[in-house]
Length: 163
Image (cartoon, rainbow, N blue to C red; front, side, top):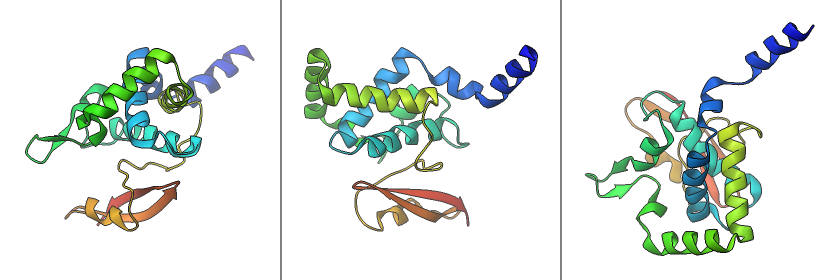
């Protein structure tokens, strides 16, 4: 019976999710959650954190959390997670982290839940988000279109599919 339990455990726990669940990755993703979704509900923060996890697990994106977060656009001038380009967000993050504020703790919790797979993905696989109604159309290209759009708090999460 114990070997059956071990088999079920191995089957249910994704090796990719386990490899993402590190202190370094949690800190990096918490920084994104803090900057992009600090005032959101827990579900909204979790959804933003999962966009990083979903990118790591989606072909066409970098395969590590640091590489996903360092990915740039606009001829290399801007990070895809624009909070990383905002120096004030970085200062606020460092201050809240130093004081271990509730906002800091909530961001860390959302990052931990997503990276360690302890709470389900409320976006069901989104790799992008934006904050304006119907803004998700900007993520379409000649290969992929928005199949579904999920709103969580003030953010919209497109679920992409082949054209």
